[in-house]
Amino acid sequence: MKWIRGRGFPVRDARGRQVMVEGIATDITTVKEAEIQLRRMATTDGLTGVPNRRHLMTMLDQEYARAMRYGRPLSLLMLDADRFKQVNDTCGHAGGDLVLKTLARIAGEGLRAMDRMGRLGGGEFAVFLPETGITTARIVADRLRRAVEDAEVLFQNQRIRFTVSIGISTLSVHTEGAEDLARRADTALYGAKSMRRNRVEMFLEQMAPREGEKEG
Image (cartoon, rainbow, N blue to C red; front, side, top):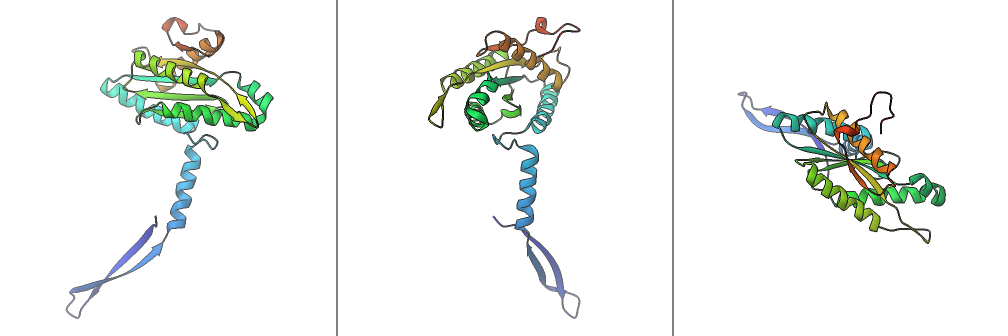
């Protein structure tokens, strides 16, 4: 694709009537491609190619506002690769990077066009599911967990198996914003990690940490 910037100038006859247009065309493809690349770098995780934390939270803010405005359901999944530090220690960062790329690919394959996934950092990802209540969110999370458990990464003649823990929160009358929705999913994830990992937990109101307790 080429980007062309054009400027036109009317040419008039002796009676002042426009008879033609002369113009200048400038090829600005290189400039536009550089702008697109910079925008992509600002919003995309360089390793996995999914939205980065900042961009994902911006999209979640927008989706939260839409869900509140129209009274629509919204669910959020928090995913964390189990024992990811152990993978890095055993296989090095190159092996760990391959695990993260595989996790992102598997998760992306199971999502609808309207769903959005991003990497929060380390081995942690988030997925928000518009128009989705808790029952369907649980089905999506369980399917994702099983797909990861069944996957295998081949790295330098080593077969790496890994699992993922998932926390779910769903928009309710108690939710106080997109950040609160994320905090609740993170609390549920903390519960899943505390119970032998490789499991899905849903946020329940009784899971909310009391004052002074450690969150997620």
